[in-house]
Image 1 (spheres, rainbow, N blue to C red):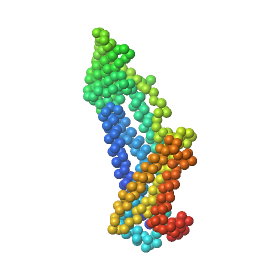
Image 2: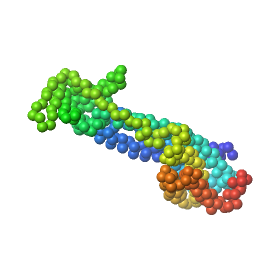
Image 3: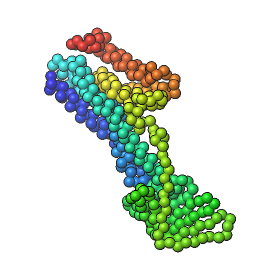
Image 4: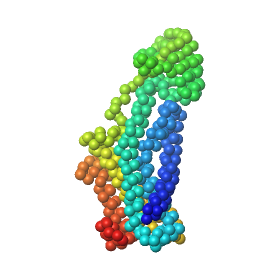
Length: 365
């Protein structure tokens, strides 16, 4: 019996890792393209792209793992049915009830990982991602520059241009800057420049070398010209309030103590992820039943359709709760209750009412 259990769990685990890798590849490819586009347009420094990508991967684990388990059970058992191995197991006395118990145990172990990711790892990753984005937004005058392109300053009152930028983004060549200050306009041009951080204050400066400073007032036919060997430009920083961060980035214990409906809904979503994992794992067992002639992918479309409907209803339920449409006593839990009933109906239709009742009662079938 232990050998059979290990064999079934190995089949599911190998398939799970394959499905999870594919989903991660699709997710990370999409995110990577978005981050590269933001970096190319000057909205994101190139040196934080990989960091943000890693944080997004950790944040997505809690969402992708339940779906991966669901598809993995479908594909693994679909192969067992296709190769008539399920028939052989039944002939050896390994009935559906024992298979369900194996998958239930595997789903619970997976749910523990999902729970840790949903309650702790994902919020931490979102928090770190928010901090990086806040720092990017607060680095005021020049961020994520692209060589040979004009970029607007963070304050919106000036432009910046550099013909060449070093690979690390810290050194620049052939620089042009223009900014409006009160009633005057200031223009700076320089052959070379570099970003420097003051070790005492932590403030960032753009140090220009071998250039000119032009200052004039619109409508006044007079221009002040100053030649310099070295000139420092302070990069202004904007304060970013903690409250502007998304609720997905808040710690779970903070959400638990909150009275805000949006944060309560987020807390319930995190807690429900392990529940979703177990329900999907149990549903996949009867859905995977098929004849050898139909193949392992026979039920895949139906299963994915059910998953899409379940996910969409969950999203609608969370939106309703955030807007106060549903009472706090219901929250989003009613969706899982309805889905549990649906899972039981699938078992009754596939296995029969007597079989299902005996399994729920813990009796041998």
